[in-house]
Image (tube, rainbow, N blue to C red):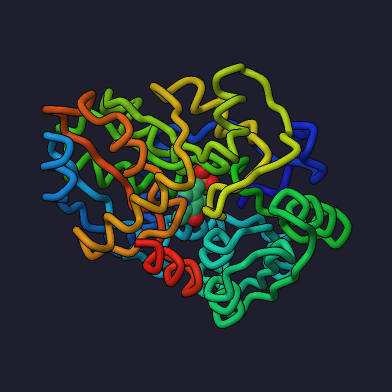
Length: 340
Ligand SMILES: *Cc1c(COP(=O)(O)O)cnc(C)c1O
């Protein structure tokens, strides 16, 4: 078991003394898949008749919402904790989360009997996610006005108290574990032409970029919300800048900071980045509910919204849209249905 070796912080906003930030290799990704398979079922890839008809394409949905905790984030944690440096096993892990990353960490930490602390912003309006993290045995701390303030607090606590701070994006183990979804798509749908995935910290899009993109040669497209476009800008302009604001109801992609490692991978292997409006996210959620009987949370609808925005460009293609999570709060669901 390697011991923990800090490296220079990759971006100005990271205060935790850091560790290896080399992108995972293909070998790392296959090794991670072997671990992930021990704990998690393969997720279904199902054809959407409604979207296929609308786009005149073959559209498949990768049902990451069917995983325990109802989002893809959990994939990475089995890989990270299975390889956790011994000095952190008793002290445990700390992270910041808008809910799904935290639920994933809590589940895997419980499996390996490692303590887990999750910092959420005091403003997080999703009791479903918070209750779930507590039910899974994690300690939940509410701190800060948004994700990035919660993240800075978690990093500080990690540095001061000796927890293993788990970053949302700058974690080769998380990206490698999350890339197991890409390997499944490669096996189930080797004819894929285009995969469109939401981007928050970018761990998931960079994981698809390293598999479906780099290994299979498909186009991998990332999507952000117009009101929270920090990664879109960083990717387009090649700079890492903290934005003053992030505004979207889709908390899974509501972040102000691009992260060095996923950004580097996306710059190398993403074909394109797009933006969608919050109204398009709502319309995509309603559409998925009515036509496909799938509940998607705001972030998870971004790929569908972007595909609908591309329209005719996708005609004749094989398109994969990951449904990244389904933890929509009851209140948002209610508002969404009332608006129809
Ligand atoms: C976290 C999250 C995303 C964004 O994933 P990143 O790896 O942070 O880019 C998308 N959808 C859902 C449901 C999420 O929880």
